[in-house]
View (cartoon, rainbow, N blue to C red):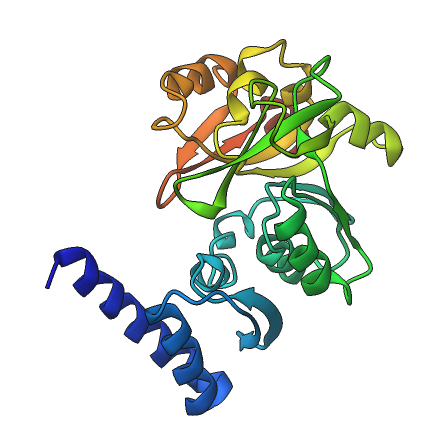
Length: 266
């Protein structure tokens, strides 16, 4: 038996034990069976009291457990003032937006997801939360293309990559920018931006970075393996900000403007 197979079985068993607490044995065994046989089905689950639509044989359940299991607790103690304006770039199936909504229930959250397939689940999972606004688009730099191609990477649903370099035979997705979102909602500043866009952050960090000056708190996952040099670009782009490494590949970046405002207020 290969180590990969052993690891997959162990992960499925850990997941089943967690799911069984809120979903019962039969539902958990059904999901385990679909995962083991690599059968993709859309199923309903409950996790941490939240009802979700997820796909079996995909990263969906693991992502839900990570994001709803305290991934954003590190920002709770920051002196953020309600009502917040939040962008979730790389919304996937909506669990990060749900987690942020749980922490900041009066916030307006713009959840951006380029994949039409993921977007349908995002809409289903956030439909009951009126302050989460789902947008089927790819986030690009100011002056970037109006549409980009979308291609699936070897990480499956989790790893869709939007790029102007993607061959035209792939699905084309409309784009948006931080500046456009701020303008549409008549805002000057973005309180929180969570960015996990599978390497799409590279042109945002390398282009003129006016958008970064308008983001108080940035939670970003860097994809050095997909875009070599991106960690260097991030350090250059955020040299005037305060950065903290979070668990995994995410980094918390706080603007000096945000820090100064709160120092003066206190």
